[in-house]
Image (cartoon, rainbow, N blue to C red):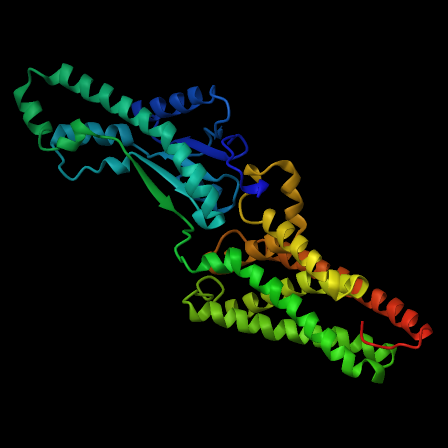
Length: 374
């Protein structure tokens, strides 16, 4: 699909670089990152000298202001000097810099684009900084046997003193959740399609016995009850596959996810029911194909990597259902109010359209002395 075509233009992916070291290493890294911006198609690097606390870097990621934050640790340069001076064998090169990100926001974008692109920039900078620091130490202490002997107790301080630790603040750590946040929604959509096919079959038996008011109530209530039941079944299937729904919402997580799935089924099902009333069962399958493709195309990867056309996905059911599921399962930034709002809006559009089309169809059929459930 066009939305998943490989896109090497990363300029819309915002990443912060923060210097909390205020020393040799911090200056080397920040200057090197700024120099990397000359290359076209690179990450959208941002620099904020006012940030002085490590916790702020985490807040930037969790608040989704950036896809990642590269942070030079406080006192990283002096920590290496101290380790060399006392021969600290426990010195950890990974303490020099850290990369904070949240793969649960979108594991495809984070894992295949953001993290590799950041490391492609920072790893050569750390290697160059290590070479310069080791060269300087050897030049200054090469003839000082005592200092050199002490430094040898920390071989990593000379061989590879700087490295980047990766901290996934909201890890996509449940493999089976791929179904909940991606392909499982196609099942919900096809279940919704099956429901109105069953209703259509039922209508051939009960349609002649119902007046207009009863028909509208029948179609509305039965459809919503069916969505509620199938959504419950789908939610229980997620639990059966070990997907925890209580990590961030406690016991209420199950109910919130059940309601999210119910609204998702209503958002994709009711518009199909309304158009089925007009198109008939013969052509409803064509709309099903269109409906699946349009929802999937604008939902599975981040909009920063898609052509602008696919931003319609912000207003489509799948994207909002997936975003809500990520919040419930992985604790990403909550947009649940917006997500439920969009889904309920689609339900309202589908319900009103279905009632209008059903009324018009029944009145048309009555003039022809035919009364089947549309």
